[in-house]
Image 1 (cartoon, rainbow, N blue to C red):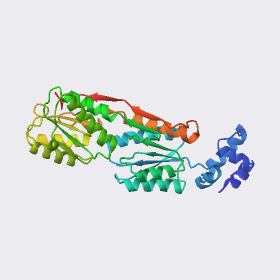
Image 2: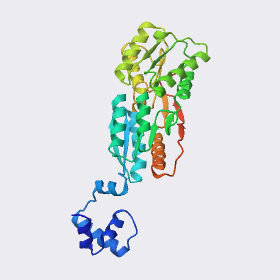
Image 3: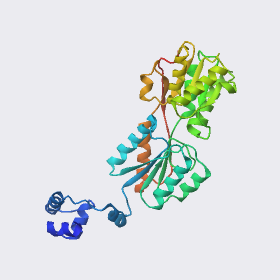
Image 4: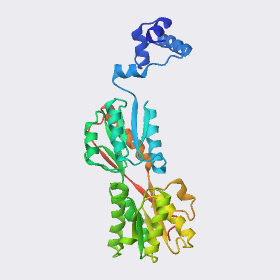
Length: 327
């Protein structure tokens, strides 16, 4: 079954069927005849043929660092809603925080012309990333990181972490911090700097062994809380770079009979669903991740259609959600 057979069965020209399939003008009578034949035969147009004819795949590649992340799933939900409504399908690529895989997917998507555009949720941008991005032959939008010179949608991580640290320091005098690798500019460097600047503004000196670098996991948060409390038992607050890390810290404190928030306050970043049901409920930063995904998708649509030609940066707002893990 091909377009010529459809035309013959419907009693119209091949060009008329082509216009119908590409949403061009076709009279109501001929449109009904073509639709009737397609419904009867179950004909599905060849995507490869359409790509060759139009130069479009109607597919967008989304490169993510971690598939089992609440924040990332919310961003993907926002992306999907906008792009599906615009007639695009999503090709999701998970890298497991492997920078080389990010570069590999960037090149794979563009070299084989599999997608019309790319949304990249990167974590650590290297010179190799810069080279791969410059070689991309389709529009690229960076999501959840700030990368100079590229269209991007990112969180105000510095201000958010500084504000939540300010909240803790109203009653805490010996805070600790559990962050992630500084090479991750948003979650690592900016959140850590926000915490340290809040402490400096209040004249609070934070010892090196009261600060730890974790992975993005509950287990790692547990281990880092154990290390900090072992080295600095006087610690009365743990400001964590993510909710997952904070869940681990809460688990350690509960297992060792340390009361939260009476003895140690705990905060996170992300406001995932578990933040409302852990014990005690977690004080955290609410980033508008789903809206961030929607904004990135809208930005990419503008670049793919040519209605938006100037690289733009969108810095999202945030909210501090105060719950039972702080005083």
